[in-house]
Image 1: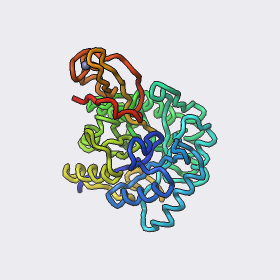
Image 2: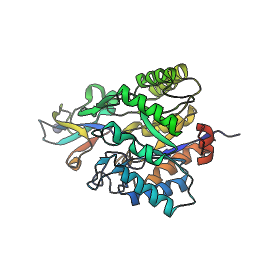
Image 3: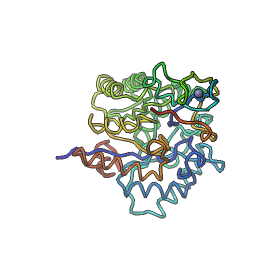
Image 4: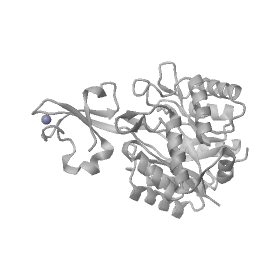
Length: 280
Length: 63
Ligand SMILES: [Zn+2]
């Protein structure tokens, strides 16, 4: 049987604006439509960020709520897995970062497994207190953490929380490759992340994305090494050299083509639920 | 949360042209990173950061 590869789409992120690419979906209405469009093209998971009315990243629960309301109202046939960020604004406090998870109980939410400097300009803080609180809260609410690792140390940190009972196996990792201040995106580094994960957290599943020039290398690498893939304008506003992306669907379609040409199949949302151990 | 690549923005002290290099290409360019793609002079640092709204003023060096 062909192996199933899960495509996650991250359509918006916290940073790119219309001025960077006019096709980035920003409002709840635009994001709701984009999720559906990407699901039709093969995305099984949507990783969502929200923007305030000025287009800046926000953790405002009302924006998440509005987006999910519009999405469910317009597209009752869509069974995509919703994965809400807990890191959409580096100035948001810990309470705001989890308020929407408590209220909306998504199937998945992101869990950034350590702190780092944000683009050499600010702090992206994920304190031990926040990570313990999130891990226990997610278990209580039955929300699967998407463990974002920007370097191998964050995998070791996940192993620590696994031993401590804050996280529960099997874990699902997102290897964030090529971000400024994170591990550079190369095949050698991707393999190292995978091997580090297998040593420290055996039985875990993983996905990856590459920011900037390594985006395609990470896509092909993920498929060849048996992982899953995340694509979308959160990570890349350019589709290719000198070419702005038309839509998130364009990225999803390319990922689906690569997966099929390799001989794998694109996982449906229900197949992704099975792979990730989600209880719908 | 991710945020696209960071860039170094330069101005050439010889020919005056402005250009930018993605930080994720440091390994590929090695010692040539920051050099003017038009005349080969090492550029003068202007600023660094994510893609900006004045990017059109800068030539993006990719190969
Ligand atoms: Zn020059």
